[in-house]
Image 1 (tube, one colour):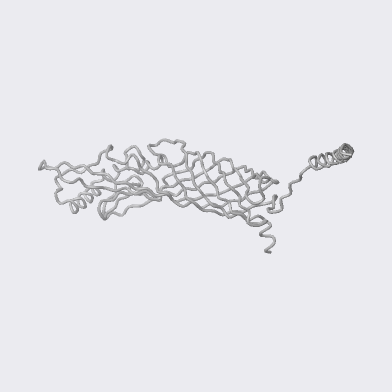
Image 2 (tube, rainbow, N blue to C red):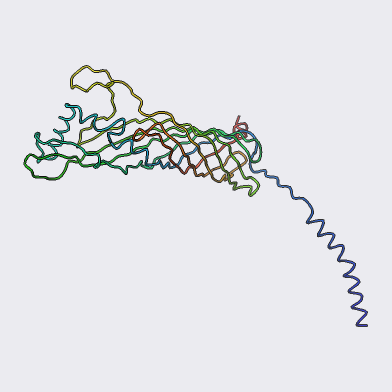
Length: 310
């Protein structure tokens, strides 16, 4: 009787196992189709963004006043009228300095470690998506950079006694525009909400030095030649010119980030942006490539967003 029960169980197991195995094969061999309905994959995207831009300090040396730069301290120290004004302001602030003392600056006393301050970058862009993954984008970024430094002036005292050295400041302001033409790749299959992306392309830029001035106390002097090569003379009728200091440049750019889908037509894209480029602002008269980067957050709207609001 005992053996009979065992034989019956074996027969039942043998009858059921092939069916179960066939069922497992059917399930495992069925193809899986990914269908993402959270974001429209084709058409145009329009985005606007903002973030922090970190400019390479090498270009900031354009503003340190060195005689090796096109705009430098020799421009004001070599003008007898401006030199007299500098003397007057130094004597007002430092009574131990007299008109008989010669006031100069030394190249080695200048700031050779100048840096741009971290500034806000604005970003506008348009992207055409060919499908789930590939796209082509054109973007424009703008940033107004500033930098400043202090250094000690040198003077020769006729008395032979040395006191505190006068302090001079230099302030610079620069407008930097960047246009990037990039190919983009979106990894849309990993997750319907969080989609990594990368962008690689060419950059065309334009830089303009808006301001470069030296200060002692409450008085300032521009280091940019507004008089067409002529020496400034107080009270004279002199023509001034809007000279552009800077110019165009080029390089390569890239970005990597995460598309966070809010709806079928809106997403928020935090991204890291970087570029290796040469700029029209040339410190020491040398055009060099250097690395600049930023962190931005974009608000992205596709063409479905605009079509449904008509």
